Length: 113
Length: 113
Image (cartoon, rainbow over all chains, first blue to last red; front, top):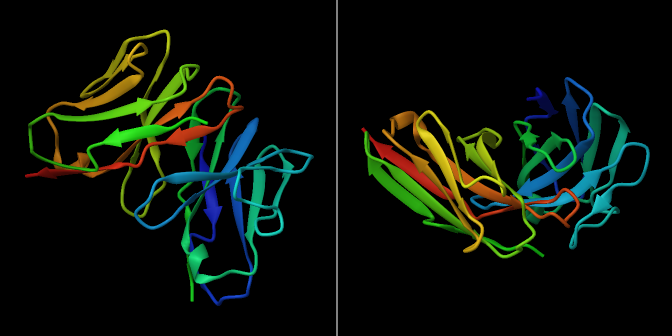
């Protein structure tokens, strides 16, 4: 399995601001993903972070709201833009290989006031 | 797309008893089914997984069974211990769905000492 770290681990932000979350993995991986987990809920895939190209977003998520970067095979960022209280969630990155197991990071707990 | 249902939503058992969590999926092309354990304040941790060419897999006190005909799979935990208390998520990876994991709604397991 891979060792995955996320920064920050938690944050409290004001509405209208933006927050960038970092995901770092200790080895090169093919696939990196970003999920959202709203309080007490299951996980919902936001997008697949593609190395060297634009991320692939799931229905209901758009690049303007959740811009993603993946400059190399071990690092990705997710930005939550123009935040509102509805964006309060846990944001998780996961890594894996095509059609294989996914491993999750510890998550970033975001509270928007 | 894939739809994964999970039952029960909450489960309380006495220490030493067994716990069973069941999931159903809708996409007959799905071929990979992981189970994750999420403790409070942490990211989901893979605990066991099964592929569609196998009917059962066991790892110490944890086992997973898969019935492809009925499109359901179950997690079995025997000799439960207080440290098994957590939220458990099943997931399904559709063959045609790129690399998307579709998650169940989660089961909060409480093991009573």
